[in-house]
Length: 627
Image 1: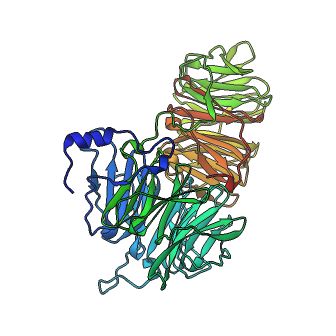
Image 2: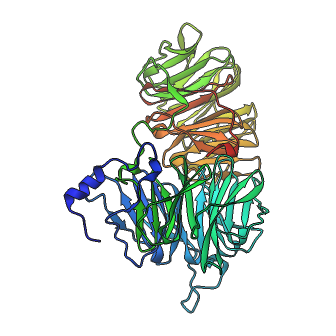
């Protein structure tokens, strides 16, 4: 395409979003300039987020648009790919962690620097694509907030990605599948030819829904209380494909009929309080309250998919290298508008210190304490935090109330005891070792762990060092009684205590583990470096995908349905129905410790004296009440 003059180009990127306030969906659609795809290129799908757009198409084409501020950054770029096979779908939670699927079972992964082929495209000894199940073409992919994804394609193939590897799931059909969508509660839907609609149950099994219609479904959209499916069938009478929309509601399928005939429909997405639909021959429609409006596209080429943008605008991609939008400035539509930051359930509390806070603890009587640099020890009185006298000028990394005094420990292996008025040095190792965590079952049973495999035990009379069998640092300690404790540390180290000895307990990761917690011996979580998260179910540890770069530094809870993990850059995860969900903290500072209290309040502390409090958890919303 001919490059627009610079003045016009800059104006294009500065103008306000298209549409009118009265009928925002009525703005005419136009082609996005400077795409760089040719007339022979088919663009099948795309993804947007974090100010970027990725579009995939034939011959392994992946176009990337970065909505930066410099002239050079606002260009469509052709990305290098390992194979020139058509790519039909793309999904991901972040711009540096994307998955594309396509022809010959191709699955490509982008890690922020390059695309790598992880599955499919198998070549036989004759240099041709092998006739094998792994080469079954894939046409759609979708995933959930936990980083799991499902891809579907020919012959009823369904592949599941658990965050680490792909596995095939048993489908109740051999019909070609062309669409997949993940619901918030873990249910997954897939659709394809001959009216095929599948539902994945929470136990992982797939069942076929009883759809009496013979539509060839190409797209699926989950709405508040219903599901919309779009596609078409070939009819001899009109001599071509006829588009069809089907609604699934209250267990029944219903074909939606309209006065105007539609060509085959390819995609549908939520759009400006309604539904945007694209199809063959450049057709665009807006559906709301069962009223269908044809939109102006001025383009005769087939449109294959819709890419939703953060502001509610959208791109439509298709044949002949087409990328279209109704937004005057699609670059502005890549970023959320001012004030569109997701509301956080966490609020900042007034803090009496600007020192880094390392730990937080709830005593048996419900009193909460926090501790940190330069001898900082805080106590929560009502809704206010106030400072206690400092045990010393040394950093305090952990506190524990045994019911017979508050203990504080940290640098230089020193442990102090507070009697309600003054601090007294309770134990001094005379070593440059830092105590990092404490846990106890009562006044005569308190443990402390720290640098170089340090484990100390207080029996009510004196502190004694225990043999740990390691020189690695131990960062966290959690227990369920005198003979049931875990300590975690460097390089995936987990030690368990049986009342007599400490022994290693293999997790299966080399990442540092910074915290451990669990409501029972058969339900334990540990978190650590680069988003590491593992779960023990009573028989074995299983690593759980978080797809995070942030370090997770602390985990705490009161039950299997009330647990939280916090980490760097204000990262907070909440455990819900066995899945860890990321939720906004409203802060970008590092969070070092979290404490879920027995009365329902949750507190997180961290850098610069930050103290956050979470609102009480609201009742869960049923699946179809969520968009």
